[in-house]
Length: 243
Length: 223
Image (cartoon, rainbow over all chains, first blue to last red; front, side):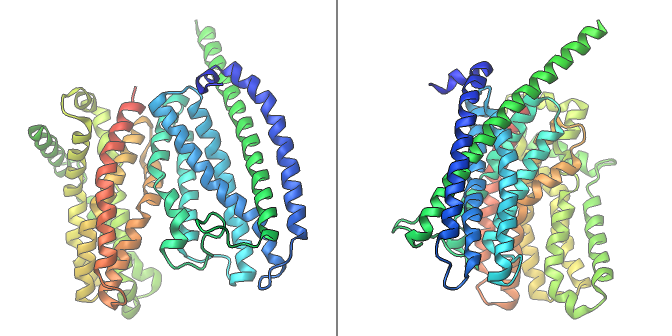
């Protein structure tokens, strides 16, 4: 189906009604399998059992970058192609991305305490993820500050595109600067440096969290559309009451 | 085009420097920040000298945030923004002209006063020279990031606090490399040129991105 067909909110609602349960089911199965496999996977020779935080921390980290990228693409959709659902998608991605980014910081900090000996370090990777979190908060603050959803969407889109400079910085921070965070170990040109016994559960869990993200994203988009409809109906009712 | 640029810059400078413009407030705020630091950490000159360059950078950054949201908001209030939007000159050029005027009125005084305030903190001469140079390169970038936030907050009833929240995360790289270059000049573990060139690169990046994004914001957000 071409993307423009989704511009009709009713068609989007129909599609969402089919897709949300499918993604939710996929998320439940994949996260379940991934985490069980994660618990059965061998413990790390240095970190011991603590390595199991990886199976939730890494998916949150990937998805907080992915959600920002999605928000930036939606921003292009708002400003360039003027797709009517693009700003709805952008807002939903901002909300969930913010939550995932927060969970990434929290799980990372809980992982860091026993392994690095500190909850927080002003290290390039950690700092750039914190900046990513601040950018999410800025975009959401802008959404909340402007009453008209269309104008708010365009303003947030511009801010999202400007803030996109941070995404490659987060991605490559461990390669450009010395960091206590480990360098890229999965998406490498010369193949992953993690042993398959840990990589498989990680990838399954990541796929599960991706499905969870898509479920929440579609649901958030649906709610936002309903919220806007309520707003329009209220304005109409108020106008009628006055007349 | 040059005429428009000069006219807009001259007008904004005049407005900033005359009564009600508030060009000097940033310098007073900067002085106030530097004054309260010794009360917070204690009047210990060796410690102040060590953190002095960072204090100067943070003070200048916070002081240049003041009034950034007014770049477009005051024009919006008196209606002159509509005239600027209707003019033949490209909106990006007008945005550059307004940012240049704003920097001359508020950023440049901060750069000039910084060495004097540094003396109060006991910062050594080499570091003073380095901090002035890095501020001279870094503060324009803060103004140009602020240009984006200012254009976005034109749509808001009260933009002031929000624009500061939007600007600060983007200004972090400037702070990192500005302070790194200053420390490099004093301690000398890495050559001064390395972080300084990165600072120059970031500034050049925002000199381009700022006006383009601000003009896009003005076109899209105002209806």
